[in-house]
Length: 475
Image (cartoon, rainbow, N blue to C red; front, side, top):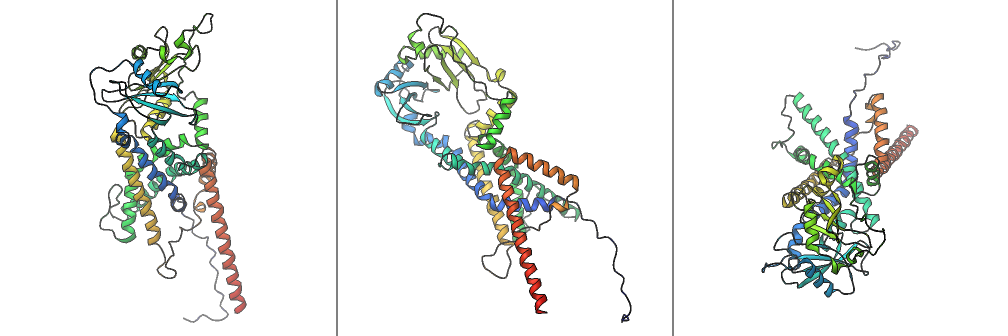
């Protein structure tokens, strides 16, 4: 049909269709950028964390010659074992001891060593049956060199305090990436069900091919790992530099911190001369009697003894990590009277949050449930590596089929915030500010992502505007 030239076509004055409200576009874009830019840090944390989880088991083989002995009769008194260690290192000052927990373990005697850093000690290993010195190692807070090195690799890449930024960035973003992936995976499954298809959540659709198959494995594996990833993120944040300081402040304000053992003796400072062993003379202490007194207070092997550093102090006896041990009881023992001057009962003196924090940290280190704990952590680390690898593979599979051979997939469409309602935007802004304050590295990196995204958008708009002007001039 031909329209007459003088006929005016009425303009469509109907309002545009309303924008469908959805969180999905925003979360897709956030998940994409976090996956591409933060995933390398998470990947390094997964590799180093998996190695660190196996450290207790590896140490049993690496230090077998000093950690284990053959039982030959009755063990010597702990005082004689300590004397053997002091004779081997007469120029060092004894600071503590770790008695053997089983009949096949050696005794560790700790010394302060001026050639080591402040938190380090010289551990001398003694055969409890013969008194023979088996060897010595520099230890950090009781941990042997292999564990110390792997711990430093995981926490700060053995670069010191500046290196801790990497692990805090990984821990701060891990929960965001994990929960964002959960949301997108559930939305995808719901969409499949609406189209009368099998919306899988916990199983892989093996009939899928190409990018869809990669997405299936990526999403399903992430769901199975979700609880472990959230746990590692939360416990990792407690050790971080900046966010960890906020955690400490909150726990202190609410009295949720771990109780500290008081080793001061009440009868000290009231005149007279303090007993020799009360002034820290290691040769005068009956260590076996101290252990017996501590056992009466509920402190049992494996444990460590910490000697007084000055007069008027008791010997500190504290339970150390052991598989399936839930407590960390401690007691102060008067080495003169062999009485309990102070104690910490885990079930009585720890708050609920302090208990959970203590268990969480030990589980994060692979110590709470022994070899099973270590294997679970290793499995989570390996699974996370596959999730990251498939995430990058999906990015590659979305690349343009024409053009550069090195092209990668385009990022998801902008405008996710505009798809939200005003109350949702206001709530999101408040949440971002609060989370950014509590997790500073997450807040700063997110601000950098947004700034870079805005800059890229402005550059593209400027180029598009110039091209439009050039085409207009050519016309």
